[in-house]
Length: 471
Image (cartoon, rainbow, N blue to C red; front, side):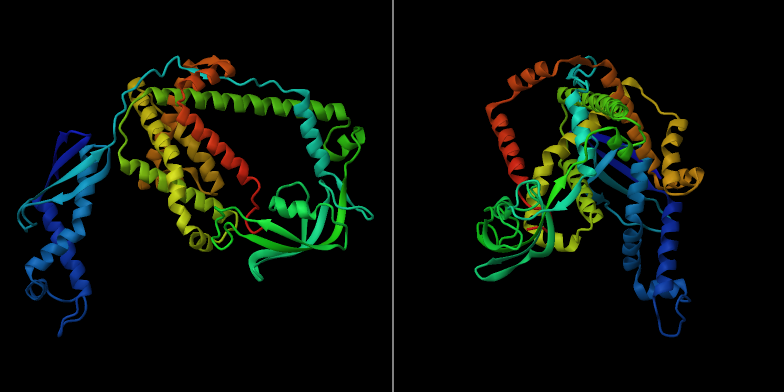
């Protein structure tokens, strides 16, 4: 196969392809062999139809079209691979003036959209905020109190109403205009008051009730509630409070430290918590500094991103989201049916992040090229080895499978991008967070700041909604 590349404007390229006479002959042989296996003709057993009879009955024109159907995609992909071009899409279907003929080469062309090449801006010496990784006494206190919460006991109480922090056992059932609301009923439901696991109005209605009491609580649903039949409506919840338990925290002393850890004293436990927090804070600060520096380098670059790359990234993000739901035990079919009207808006919300992810990859690839960064086979093996261990397979066998599938190139690309990000980080200048915040605020337009505020408000409102399957 011969290929000739002619680059065009807009990062496009036309590839002229000549399929050799030998390859055309093999394609005809393969197609005819396949037809012979499938076609049934009177007087011949299946798979035993002679080629001349097959050609006579099906006609050369039909067989030629079948050759194109069988092999055009394969020829096109082979031509792209041999051209060495980084194509992201086929702009036009393969064009050919003639058709394949036995004994002659076959010529066609294909127009490709190529990966865009960013114009790099400053990526060495960019400024990025570095967070303070100091662990304060309050941080340690918070973790100690979490341990106390985990090892707390629940004690039944009577003679007083339920208050925030209590664990209550309730039966509840929601109705709308006298009709039961599906998935808004439960028996022996245990709820910590103040946890925000159910709608705020329902939780507030339970507060103040005593064990054995029953009441009806009105719960308004937001106008943009996912279930249309509930959006903007007010449901009535019949609630029966069956039991109240208060949380009893263990005393904070050396005995507590022995019960919850391998340490003999509370001081040793606190020191261990501080050490772990210090490591976690330093790691998080380093990661955020690296991410901020890379983002600065990305912002400094310019590139025109083809729509197809953004769409594919958005679709990939949506698939990741759906897989995460499935991993949590959510019925995807039911979710898709209930959310089909919202999936489009979700994709639009993902678009800015998808576009930035695509641009980040392109910029890191361009830095790899400019700095001539490389990865060794040993570095690739260091990635493959834990993958093999996780899958309980031999590293060499997995490596071979990854090579055959082409996925090994994704590992190499990720390693190279990681090196490019490391180069940006190692050359970045750390600045105080307050200075970085001032620069960011000066750069923002009023419209951008308003959008951010609106998004924050939306996120805050979302915390009042129940978890999936809860009222």
